[in-house]
Amino acid sequence: MEKRTCDVAIVGAGIIGVMVARELSKYQLSVAVIERESDVGMGQSTSNSAIIHSGHDPEPGTLKARFNVRGNKLWYQIAPELDIPLENSGALVVAVGAEEQDRLPALMEQGRENGVEGLEILSREETLEREPHLTPDVSGALSTPSAGVVDAFQGVLGAAENAAHNGVEFLLNTEVRGAIVENGTLRALETTSGTVEATWFINAAGVYADEVMHLAGDHPEFEISARRGEYFVFDENAFHVNTVLFPMPGKKGKGILVTTTTHGNTMIGPNSDYISDKEDHAVTQHGLNEIVAGATRLVPDASPRYVIATFAGVRATGNHHPDGHGRDFLVERSATVNGLINLAGIESPGYASAPAIAEYAVELLREAGVTLQEKPDWDPIRKRIPRFRDMSHPERANLVAGNPAFGRIVCRCEEVTEGEIVQAIHSPIPATSYDAIKRRTWLGAGRCQGSFDYPRTMEILARELGVSMTEITKKGPGSVFLYRQTKEEVI
Image (cartoon, rainbow, N blue to C red; front, side):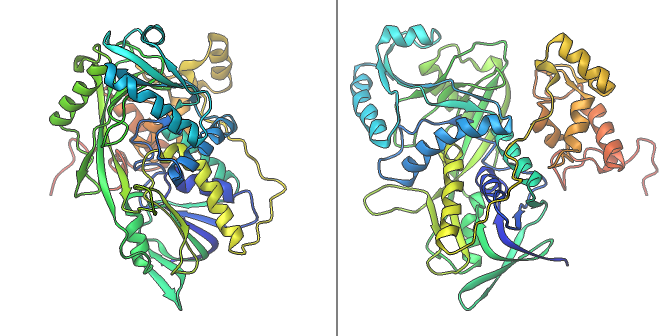
C-alpha cells in the first residue's frame, strides 16, 4: 500500500473539511483530504435544509452562536468568489396564535445578544404581505433579514474545487481504519489507500468524528448520536414561498420549516428521529405525515400531491455540554493527543458556521506554532460549470458555437446538456457516477426524476471514463446499473 506524507491531513470532505482545506490552501503547506465516499459532500453537508442561518436561534455564549453569526457574514463574501448560488432570502419565524406571538420579543433579544443585525417583529398584516401563502391564523413573525438559502452541494464542491486548484490533494474512496500514536502524538492514519503521515490531523468526519477520536485514544466519553431528518421537495410549478419560514422553536430544535430553494422548488422538513444506524437514510410514510402536518400548520397549500422528490439527512449530534450551556459544537485542539484537532458534533447551524469554523481551525494551528506563510499566487476564484438552462438565447448560441456538445440536451426537464456533463466528469473533483453528475448539474432532478436521461448519461460516463457501461454506478462502488449485455451468455 502507498504511503503519503503531508503537513496537514483532514478527515472528511463535507462542508467543514473542504472549508478548512480551502483556508489552509492559502498557505505554503501540503494538505490532503481523506474521504471514505466516492465524491465530496455525500453526507449531512448536502442532505439538509440548505439555509445560511442568521444566528438568532443558538443559545448565547455557545460556539454555535459565535460561529453561526461569523459564518453568515463570511458566506456572503465567499459565495461570489466560488460562484456558489446563494440568495439573501431572509427568514421569518412565524407565530401562530397569541401565545407564540408573546414569545417573539425574547427570541429577538436572544438574536441581538448573539450579534444578529436587522431583527424586527412584524405584525400579522406585514407578515401576510410578505408571504401570502401563510395560514390566515398567523399572528406575526420575527424577521431575520441576514438569512439565506444556498445550493448546499455547490457550496461543498466550490470550496473543494478551489482547494484542489490551490494544491490540496483529495483521497476519495479512502476509509480510515486505524491510527498510529507514538508517545502521545498522532503520527499517521491507516487507511484503505495506505498510510497517511502528517504533522497535524484535523478530524472533520461528521457522524464518524467520535470514532476517529477513539482510534487516536482521545475523548473516550464523547459520542455522536445520529438524528435523521426527512425532507420533501415540491414540483417547481406548485406553490412558491419567498423566504425561509420557521415555526416557533421547540424542544427538538427549529421545527419543521417551509423554504424556498436556489433551484426554484419549495421544500419542507425536517423531522427529527434518533436512529441507531448512522447510514439509515430511509424516508418513511410516518415521516411524510409528520412533516406535512407541521408544514401545513404554516402553509396550508403544502399538499403531498405536489411532492416530486424525497430525501433524508443524518445529523451528527454530539454530547458535548460546556459549563452552563446545552449541547454545543466540539471545536478544539486535543488536550490529550498531540497533533489532533477535533471539529465534531457539527449539527445545525453547522453549514452556516463552516467558514468561521475553518477560520478558527487555522488559528488553532497558528497558536500551536505552525508556520503559516501565505502563497503569493493563491487564487480565491472558482467558476462552476455553465448552466445552459439559465442562459439567454444569444449566450446559448455563443456557447454552442464554441462547443457543439452544449447544443445536445440530455435531461429535458432541467435542460442539462452533454457539454455540462462532460465538464463535470473532467472537473477538478471529477464526477464519476450518475449521482455525482446529478449533484453538479441538477440532471434528473425534475419531474421525470431521470427516467429520460439515464441511458444517455451512462453512455457519456462510459465514453469519457474509458470504461464499460457495466462499470457505471449510481453513487459509487456497489451501485452498478447493469450487470451484463442483454444477450450475453450467463455461465
